Amino acid sequence: MAKIMYHGYFFLLFLVMSFVIQVAHGGGEGSLTPEQCGDACDYRCSDTQYLKACLTYCNLCCQKCLCVPSGTYGHKEECPCYNDWKTKRGGPKCP
Image (cartoon, rainbow, N blue to C red; front, side, top):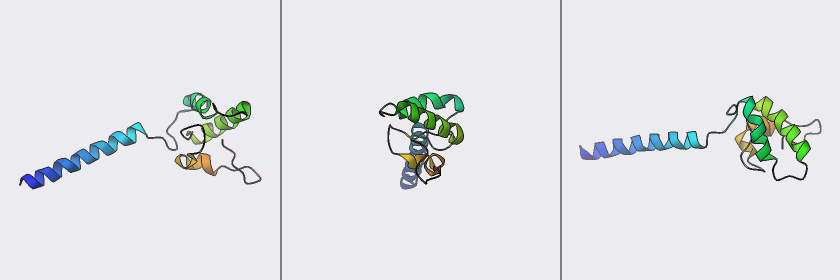
């Protein structure tokens, strides 16, 4: 009987931890409101030498996708819409 309760508590703990991790690192498409795009893009573009272009396209992409990948570079897999939007030449549209 104790073994069953032990497994039950372990499973409950696992569910709670999964929820906490998801809330803390949620991200993903639709995780931002349009009002949050400015701050997210300010951070995303903070490490580039092409600040004006980066901010322009980041905000454009964020308004469409409601998502900005974490960090100042890479991690585009977090936002498929952001990652998949391409220029006419097939290059990435979103920084």
